[in-house]
Amino acid sequence: MILTVLVANRGEIACRVFRTCRELGISTVAVYSDADAGALHVREADAAVRLPGAAPSETYLRGDLVVQAALAAGADAVHPGYGFLSENADFARAVTDAGLIWIGPPPAAIEAMASKTRAKELLGIAPLRAEDVTGADLPVLVKAAAGGGGRGMRIVRELEDLEGELLAASAEAASAFGDGEVFVEPYVENGRHVEVQLLCDAHGTVWALGTRDCSLQRRHQKVIEEAPAPGLPAALEASLLDTAVRAAKSVGYVGAGTVEFLVAEGRAHFLEMNTRLQVEHPVTEEVYGVDLVALQLAVAEGRALPPEPPAPRGHAVEARLYAEDPARAWAPQTGVLHRFETPAGVRVDTGFVSGDTIGVHYDPMLAKVIVHAGTREEALRRLAHALERAVVHGPVTNRDLLVASLRHPEYAREEALDTGFYDRNLPALTAPAQGGEYAAVAAALAEAAGGKTRFGGWRNVRSQDETRTYGDHEVRYRPARDGGYEVTSPEGVRVVAAAPDRVSLEVAGVVRHFEVTAYEDTVHAGGHRLTVRPRFTDPADLQEPGSLLAPMPGTVVRVADGLAVGDRVAAGQPLLWLEAMKMEHRVIAPASGTLTALHAAPGRQVEVGALLAVVQTEAQEEVPA
Image (cartoon, rainbow, N blue to C red; front, side):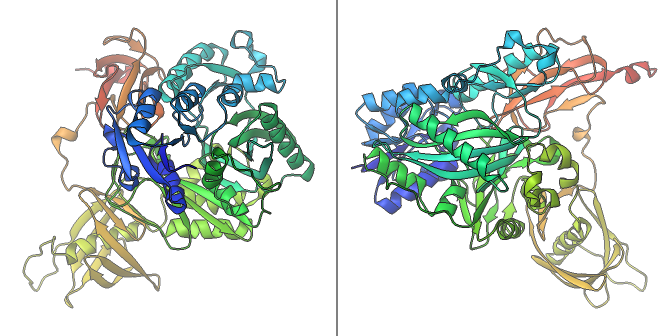
């Protein structure tokens, strides 16, 4: 019987496992890096052990330190969560060699399936060797053999780019998973990403817990998932389930696992088997009424599953809430999560609460918000409604994108699901939300009502307008004789009431209420996040033309080989690479010209907006001094 579980992970999944352990009367142990010393998973655990350092390679990827932590804390079992060491056979062996219970599949099964190349060979699928790729094979996908979550993946459309993308993918995979092996496979454009959830015991029982659709992705990482996968022909669905069960039985699989496919033109292409719990497992739990973590624990204790799983019911949808800016190439965001609240009646799996700080070292996912309903249409509507009314104050998030995605007519059509959804629709989905100008009015009047704006004494002449600017919205208003306010820009706004935390406005005969909360440089009003713009520009903020600024806080991981001040660079040429929150971002030359400054060096930590380099363009070079 398991009495104490150490979770070899962090954030949301650690908190998720702890929740089930508490319900079962099992004590919990967390491990944490220095960057996570105050994290929620550390606060929720019964005990916690420090892993000195911040980088994953120094902490959560150090299996030896995690095993030592389990022994020191008196744990008798280790749950790997997902990511990091969850698909590492050597770590699984180290856990069992230390006399601990491994809550996962046998190491031999991990070795057979965790490497995507070996898994394909096991199922008789011939790999595509990088040296054999020709122009006729394009496009191809360079992919990490271990791990997941979109790290170590590159689409190659030009043959001359293949070598560089192989190196970049290998470096990213080594950083994220401790394994730099990559391989090449044909890239199927705009297929559906469908997977099968498995649960197996040590007595030969294999449950295939239906399908999930995970087609809405950005940078090869899932954003919205649902179960069951809608609109699959019965014969195709049966084939997916059969292949998944066959894969599990072929390696004597035990525990929770997922077999992933890309479905295109009525055919299923095997992608991989993930020998762990998936991020999107809650939608399967909601549809089948099970707790997969509790079942993982039961299987690890040697208990047998019932011959058949429960019958599925209804439909579930999950949205991943990220601290990122979809309109700026999905750049991850950092800072204080001032306030985070969601409506009652939805499931929220998270590693953050109000007041926590979102740092630069790990994945930018704040939470998973899950809804279960009788039908897909109802589930989509309820989830969009819940996200729209969630209070998320702090860094920029993808919340508005999620709401727009769930309500998009293309997503509502089951037959239209595919991985190209954001390629086609991102500009429209990230367009500024309607009503931002009125939210700005509410922000300005709340500030005035709070006494932060001082007006002069009354005279018999009209008062001069006060001006406030929030993002792209300029607001002009003046005090009214009745003690209220008159808004002169934008036009057509009547002020019904104004208080420091709530403003009511009438526009075109409709009264709307705005809850307003102001922070140092942002204001949240009626669901809109507004950036406060100062009245006067700070000279220190001015940058010379051609300045390349860090789009996100992170670490410079690479500078282009041989790049030096004075070099000629071409438009679109990669100059350096930043890494933050497990994502890599290329900084490219905006135009052809001369590199006149280079402030980036490998290993340097930079804040958002930091000056990285300066490219003097050809047009600037022609301007006389």
